[in-house]
Image (cartoon, rainbow, N blue to C red; front, side):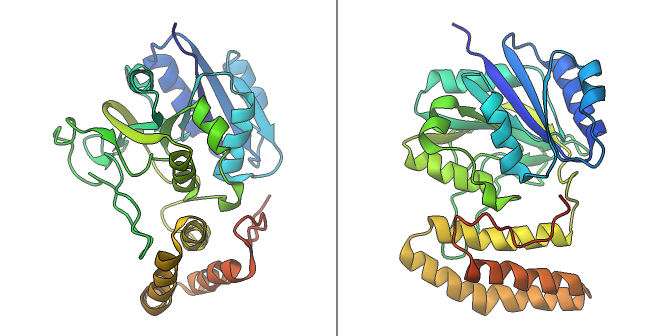
Length: 306
């Protein structure tokens, strides 16, 4: 019996980018049982009426506020009917057999909760972005993205099996894993939410895998930008939050010391050298949020335009 797949993607102020993704699905996908869900996450201009005319077979959901990456995807989960849910950034473009290969991975091993494909950069199509992740070192809250910035010469194509984490730009999740681990944690808003989700899915008894025979292209950082105060805030705030939620007690203490003694002085020196005075402000705001809020707090601590 062929399983249904629900593709869930979130749009924010870049409807033309989402158009390109949807067109790539129409042109490349050959998987027969596909539900496509697009969540517009409070874009300034509502693209849904035009989308409904252009893509009548697709389910569109509109929220009037920006719920963040996790919140937008969670809305899609509530409407998804698939046995497997494929979460793909709206700045990705599909390739032939992408869905089939990811489905085959989940079908072959019921212990797998999430599988991600190989990811290449769209603007440099021979360059890898992702061939898996190493596990987080909780003493520093750092890990490595395998293969990133390398020319893809097939050097990782033999790689199969478990990896540290799925990549949030493209990950197919077993419905049973979601039912056992719960939805994405919405208080991350941006960044680290997929890492946290992977940790919870692993604790629920599932494995995280990568399939290097499946390929997707990623334009990366279309919604947030390469280097912004918003990104700087959430990357730092959520690095601490992720460690608070997931690290063992001893590792957590060592991380706090490392962050205070090494990371903070280094970051501040970089901001000052580059005259990024607004980054200094948001950096301290990111730290203070973690000092004044519980790990489950829904207060983001950042003045977002909703």
